[in-house]
Length: 373
Image 1 (cartoon, rainbow, N blue to C red):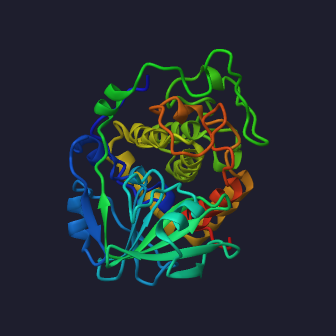
Image 2 (tube, rainbow, N blue to C red):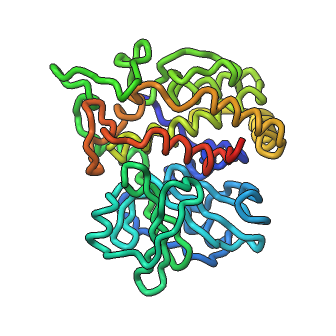
């Protein structure tokens, strides 16, 4: 069992896909029976921070999205909040593991199911990230305007709120979550049920012997150039920490960015939505017991990776070279609660018709901001 470490925050200015500075507060202060609060288009950043358990995560410049805009990313909640130059919300994007219902819809619903339930959309618009796809526009609850973005498997991958308010459910603390977890074997490891690979994927050595959230490969502190697609998200978070222990901040920053992308990819293909709750724990363990100087060194390295066009271009080139994960993400499936989101799954708990390339492209463009690089 992976031990949860309390009271630590990286507080780093990361690329959009890996920003998890909210984790220590959201895990420590929310309770399972707390009611959901709401955030609305037009809310100021101070009000949003209060709703989101008092997070102090810094905003990230996003001039390539809208001039003067900034972004707050809460990966553990599946919530991306865009602020204008006056620090007021002008857009909200929801992705897995966001669990609340918006306009009667959940992330992962089929396009046809949405059409049957809600009727034809008010408008069909191009998807800017994927020109070969279309998105639906709906208005519900009088003033809530939402764009529905679909993957190539025709399942809803994100909701983009353009007007109105959306509920923000609290996160169940890890202690409460563990108390709800039944005694059961890991997904895909039942007696007599062979493990299978997804598409062209294969097993990483020692994968089946690993416990919850545990790394598979002991890769140490390595350069991003040495990363292989068989290294799991847990491997990369562990490598990040080993670099920080050696004060190798310039090596740690790109590993941390890729770890976030790999973990997000893995969570998207697992049909148990509770599996994604393991990601904040991995991030917390990266920053546990770092000194103030180490935190500052890491923060500066990640900021430089974001601000320096040459470094960012190199990161994007390396991530494209490495490609999407090539393993079965047992480090997350073993951490899950045994729930299902309705998608058909294989014995490993992975979606059978998962849009592998589309999801990876979205993480590159919307997460790591690697459009056209």
